Length: 113
Image (cartoon, rainbow, N blue to C red; front, side):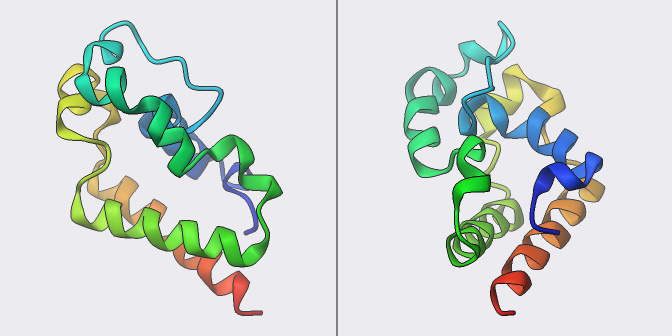
């Protein structure tokens, strides 16, 4: 799967949990905008990873970004705790974590072909 948009479950998960800070499309709910990590980090978040640019990345760059995504999902550091406090539905369930990790593994594998 070359794109997260190809899988509606992955896309919905990323939109809900990541896009506010990691996409040009994210606007954040009023309560999520109160989180310090959003207030002071959304711009930096987009500089680090912007899903709006995903389709323009070559396979090697997507794989590198996917590895970073997998690392923060596994560690539980994303979404940040304060953001989750203000936007509880952004917290990833175990099922959503597995879904994202499977997608990231596919992204990394596609770069090896």
